[in-house]
Amino acid sequence: MLGSAGRGEAATIRAGGLVTMGYEYLPYPDVRDTILAHEMAHLILGHLNRHANSYDENQQREIDADIEAVEILQRVRGMTEPRAFSLVAAYALGLKKGVDSGSLAFRSGHPPPCRKVEALIKAYPRQQAMLDRLQGDPRLARCP
Image (cartoon, rainbow, N blue to C red):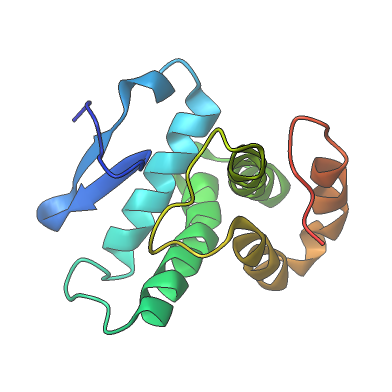
């Protein structure tokens, strides 16, 4: 479903797997598919079956959804691990740049983008060279 996901979110997923995503992402297939993979990961990981018990648990769910999104992009879109990793990591680094510049508000309930990137590289350590390249891109932010 296209429309406002609300609360500054790119997309949301509801029980039954209904995803609402902002129409502004449609012209950008890599961004669109990264967002959809993240939302589908919430469904696959069972995050819709019960509410998070704490702020920390909610943040961990967001991290886990990013890690699973890499797998989904590989299986569904047939991407290599480096390509799928680069899309998810670049999305997080783009969010950080937006938050740092003030053009995006920090999304409540989500971990800081650098925490997401740190978890991604821990899950996919073979992608360190890819992360280094991404962090050298002036269109994206760097994480310490």
